[in-house]
Image (tube, rainbow, N blue to C red; front, top):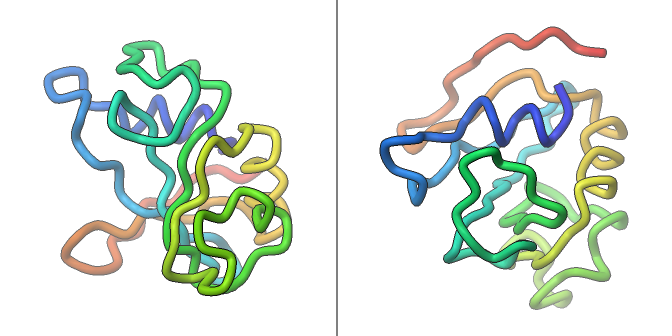
Length: 117
């Protein structure tokens, strides 16, 4: 599953501002990926088709060099947001960490197995 597929599969048409669950990768890497009128994304609006060009990443579980140029606070890489990250970069991060294997919701780890490419 690539990031665009994740965005589409986690989109809530009844509440486009709903926060998406965090992503859990095969190697244990975790991060939040969000896009809406209230996030650092492009376009910065609520897209029902989810065809964003750039998204906001938040609070990765470890420092990830591929996204450091986008860090709001590079001195604290696991406790910051990364604005306007191109989807191509997000897909590189996902591939590097073995792909999406599940999602983490506000109540803890909830696994949803995805077909990996």
